[in-house]
Every structure is written in structure tokens, then in C-alpha cells.
Length: 154
Ligand SMILES: [Zn+2]
Picture 1 (cartoon, rainbow, N blue to C red):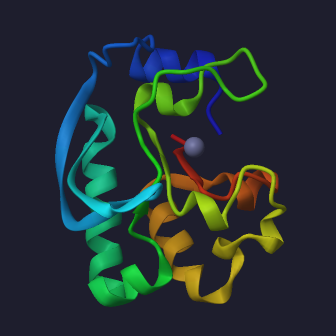
Picture 2: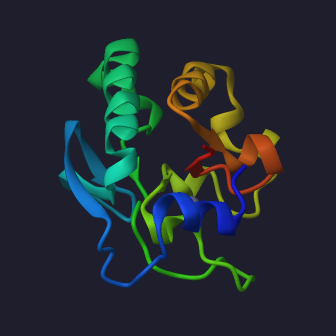
């Protein structure tokens, strides 16, 4: 995991405007997790990780296929760029750089122990492998909570 000073060195100082962001076109639409009738086809993220996010989404699509992605709730988008401090902390959330993404927050909540979260189930094994292949890891898996959250570790 990167420390905050290492992230600043690599990705710059976080700011409200997100001057380091770019917009990527998703290979499949994602549903807004808190408004599932609304679909998005674009996502803003840090330009240095844009190719990694695209790699994740493309690999997910070729492995699971769109129908399975929806069935598993992997398309439930909980946000990427969001300039804010960590919940209960003074450090910046990794979302402030647009190098983290939340998926299916309802079934993978902040305080739910990892083994009770949806993403710990066997059908999501490949989801973890794909994110890890592109340099992201899941906070649930590594810290035991906040399983919705995937962040860049390099
Ligand atoms: Zn998150």
C-alpha cells in the first residue's frame, strides 16, 4: 500500500478541481449504486491510472460477460473521484486522486467484516485477480473492512 506522501509524490497534491483527472469511456455501462435506473458510460479518474482502470473493465467484460457482470452487481458504481478526507481520519481518501473505485457499496459496506461481504464469495475470485493484475487491491481483503473499495497500490 502507498503512504500518503508516496501518493503525493507520484500522483500530485489532491485538489477539489481534480486537475489530474481524465475521462474514460467504459466498455460496458455501469449503474449508479444509489440510483440503479441511471446508467453511466464514462468515468473520471487520474490520468496516470486511466489505462489500468480500462484494463480492469475490459478484462471483467471478457471474463464474465455483461449479463453476469450485472447479475453479480459488479456494475454497481459507487464512485471514483471524490475530493474528501478519509472517513474518521485526517488523511485524504484515495478517492481524492481518482485512484480508487467503490463497487456495490450496499452489499460490501464500510463496516461489514470482509468474510460477510459479498465480494468475499467464490464467484468474485476472478474479480479480485483482475483488479490485482492491474495494480489495485481490495480493502476488505487487505484490511478486513470496506470491501466496496479498490485502490491503486503502486
Ligand atoms: Zn472507497
